[in-house]
Image 1: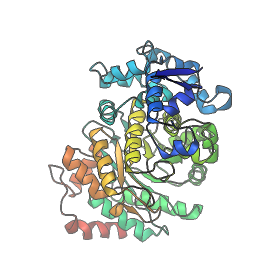
Image 2 (image 1 turned 90 degrees about the vertical axis):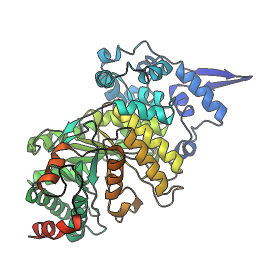
Image 3 (image 1 turned 135 degrees about the vertical axis):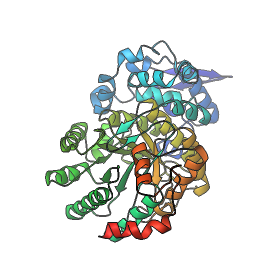
Image 4 (image 1 turned 30 degrees about the vertical axis):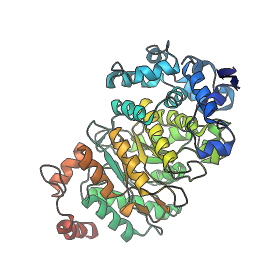
Length: 460
């Protein structure tokens, strides 16, 4: 279907829904690289006006990637909850925005609606929103998941403790874990990005995490972020795997570039469930995404990178994950050029993920060759905390020495909690209190004084 809007004497024509969405997107380098971005600010405004007048029902009639060509499209349309959608089925995209910002869009109403929203609907309405709109609506969305603790409760924000090491050195990783625990991080998970793909090395890391969590009786979960097929092999050897990790994208072809498809993800989830390692819940999957992944794989089908990202959330939603993490600035300036583009993308991702019913966290990060700095990350982290982000990263010194990018630190999590009065997962906060790491007000105790005791318990 062709879409048009006239501004003055100029008639702007958009060849199909895919083109309309791309042209309505806020500026970003990835869409410019793909040759699908609007050619001017006027064209962007024309596209947004046309998009605002588009009935939401059109997204069920016109797929941005053909149904017969893409299993993610088939997943989106085949699992769409028509009964949930009926509450907003008469609205246009602009009307949907107005409803989301109204008092009628309560937390309960948004929860009931989430399965009736397609990723393309979420992406479309986000393109009409200011940053404050994205924050306001996301704040109203509450998504709770459980494994060994409860993540996503209102007034709480979790942290993934990320103790990466360039050589997978057990001593170095253990020191980083100890540092994070003493600073109150790790309730989302303790997750290692391994440098090696050797199953023997990975198995050792799985055992290390299990030993630390068991030895200190920490109500959290471990994860070694390796390919899902490798994790299946580790589970087959009887290793103590908690969370099953995989990077995912919003098209079938992009997922194939990662070496996965929906059937494999389903197999992995069933394998994780069969271990029954959760104590308070059975959300066993951990997914990571990021704007630009489909484009970098040459698998975006001409769809703008933010809409592709939202489609990745449909993949995640199908497997009831504990955590979904948008690694927002990791791919580089070819896709998100500077701090402004990274900030906008982070707020979009968090909004779309939460609206679709996912436990969305954000790795507030940038690569060293991007036009961004830590002040930009402070700004994004603060905005996401205001928006109710589910979790963030805790990296020693905010500098990942294995992945070579800049993220957020254990101290950044303390800053956010102080400013917004946020607690951790309740089970983890209770553990900090029992372990003497926090007082009755849940403020951290003197980590330096506790270091010898905890170090000896880890080394013993």
